[in-house]
Amino acid sequence: MTDPFSNPAAGAKFDTKNHNGDLLLVTPTGYRTGIETKYGEKDAVEAKVVVINEDDPSGSEEYDDALLFAGVLIGQTRPFINKGIVLGRLGQKETNKGNPAWVLADPTDAEKDVARKYLASKAPQL
Image (cartoon, rainbow, N blue to C red):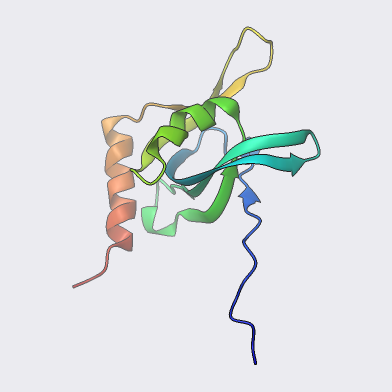
């Protein structure tokens, strides 16, 4: 008899350093606490993250099981867990602690149009 169960996915840490300046579409799906990392236990938002290809939205890069560890990103996305999609351009802002924080900047109307093209490319064709 085959075992019908799968172990939970570990999740992939979304590497913000590789996507600085990119337009992101984030669908938060959960919140995890006490994740063991090389820096100790951390909390993270689980999300589907899409790095929008602004020249060809249908060719955007998708991360289905990303973990967002950055504190401000957690604050920006956690309220929308299972409630919606967050769109913004990933960047950094200075903090009073000396380390820049990763943030999503509010999208422009043009960026919203590009995100709509991505979503339309994923819609079922009737």
